[in-house]
Length: 138
Image 1 (tube, one colour):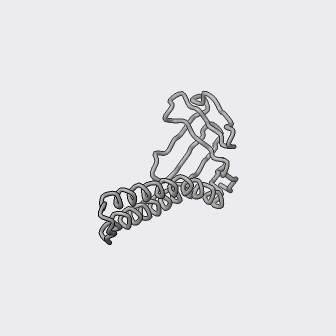
Image 2: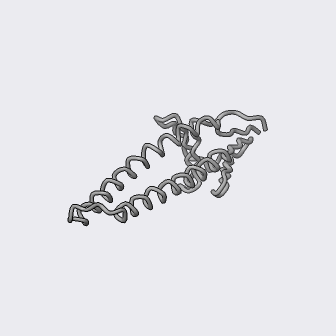
Image 3: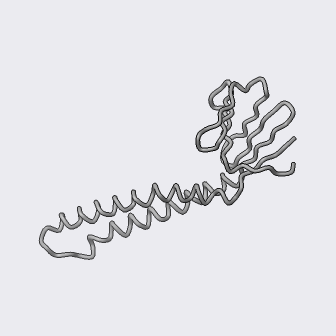
């Protein structure tokens, strides 16, 4: 029986990808929110109240991103792939354990990004093996 786990250094790539998605989204929302605040004022006066929604949005997004990254880190760290003589099992936090017998495997596909997909007869039982998986003693 062999066990495989994610290389913890691989999470920095995932974090970077998530931030490349979230940061531009936050900036677009801030620009729209600020622009709407200035249009609403219309009198040429800038009040501090027009920046309260901007501060609230930045705080909410920062909190949301931090929680999301912490959750993804826990899931990434807990990934465990166990290959036995007749089975392949994937254990991961916050997800159900998947146990496949060799006769349930329909296809094994290597993706362009370096990951491997073990397709089962039932779609929900398929296992994705990321490119960050390394050998570990069982």
